[in-house]
Length: 618
Ligand SMILES: NC(=O)C1=CN([C@@H]2O[C@H](COP(=O)(O)OP(=O)(O)OC[C@H]3O[C@@H](n4cnc5c(N)ncnc54)[C@H](OP(=O)(O)O)[C@@H]3O)[C@@H](O)[C@H]2O)C=CC1
Ligand SMILES: CC(=O)C(=O)O
Ligand SMILES: [Mg+2]
Image (tube, rainbow, N blue to C red; front, side, top):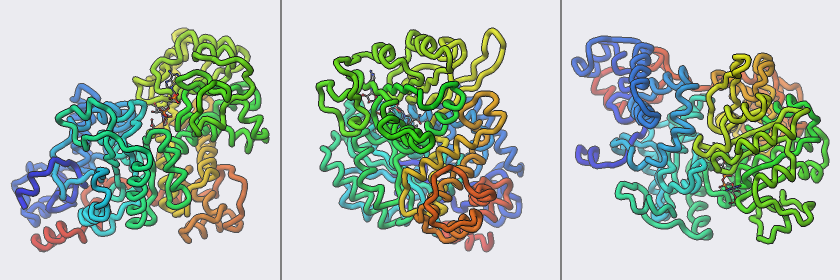
């Protein structure tokens, strides 16, 4: 056993299962003397008995001693796998500072370095998720069984984030190293929406990589082969998803950071067969629609006069634009063809037109322009002059694509209204422009949101501090997952996602609106997630798709209407529903007693049971 324990190269599985006592491993120096004695831990910890807030203070001090973001990331990963309760206390109390470390931008660098910063924890007592090589797909049943045996009874996963690492943020194909993204996204599920950390399952499909530097890297931990052709990819991916769905039928599956063709392909194959969702297409569409609704309200021109130029026509760009079309159709009564005509796209070959002379990828065809005559703008500058946009949306992965001259032209074109400029590519090194640049070049009039958080900007003339909006799907995917886990809809529909976007726009406080902000402050994210999850549940019930009877009854009763009213999705939900949702959110324990009380099923885990019986109590 000692040999097995020490031989793994893998890391961090559930921290607590690695301990002879899961409660003890989450309490450490907070363990009361009597318990130390009962568990034969006397003398094995410093004599001071402290509370969780003192531990948190020490953890924060140690975090702040790290001089780089990557060092902070490594420290936080270690803390998460050592003491999950303390980790989430720290994250929840310092979300504004820590989100950029466990998520974008630092998670991007962490993924690039994943094989080099991988910690040395060993399975079966340390598992941070599933690594499924394409060469082992025939053995997927065995892999899932191994996972089941590694978790405590009652901890079957209720949510998974799954990637194949082929398009990690805007950083390209990172192969198995992309595992940092599911791990990071699931931390936000816990922090932002209170999903139970023990029931979150990160998965990487280790299907190879076409990035030569990883294939050549002696420390690379993924399989060393090129990516498969499409048919082999889909056969293998389908087998994994089928097996997961069979093992955990109500588990919510979030597809994340697949290359654009496979992102659309997998969603199409699975959206009506399993409870699943693509975060880059639907989550991004949802969060940007939420911010866009607020921006249009503040812009100063009628919605139907918007001229929206997208730079980037991948899964994110097309996903966002489709949500915006729905918004113009549903909310403003604009016919679909007219709504579609409000959009222009630029990709790596210039403006997307039907007569450009190349074969357009399927997902671009819907938005290809037919009214351009002979005009074929080859550069973004040309397209900006041609379209004279009111809104410029970047999902291109091209750093500084919104040059100062382009930003200045946006200002020129929008003198009677406020320009909407959203550089949404991640991480920061791929962002199309910064908040400071957008403010400076538009006389501080811009309505702004970015994918990665930018610092506040102080207007030099007035000293006024302006806060940039963060248009990142982190504002919605945790709530969509929470709502889905609670009401168990048969599937996630576009109208449910639309209802969540509306709820996000509705979630701004009067103060946030008065300051011209487009998204709620991150400190309110749990409150906002409860609203958004309530909106999803309400919509699922209205569509007759919610399968959990408790939520169907609750929504129907509160709304005073039939559960299958099929009502217009308006983002509203019954008063009281959000606070009901909040009750289901996991929160870290405040003290030792609470920790013990909050983790009753730990006692069923074989490791705990044997430790408890050896100790004669617990
Ligand atoms: N803020 C958020 O919440 C989210 C942000 N994103 C970010 O969006 C970005 C794009 O993601 P995704 O759509 O999936 O990725 P893709 O790689 O599929 O899309 C990138 C798009 O940008 C286009 N492009 C590349 N170079 C240029 C150029 N020089 N000029 C104009 N267009 C160019 C590509 O053109 P072509 O089609 O010709 O190759 C493609 O259409 C990423 O950085 C990602 O991090 C994604 C999801 C959520
Ligand atoms: C935020 C996100 O999902 C992305 O950049 O891919
Ligand atoms: Mg993504």
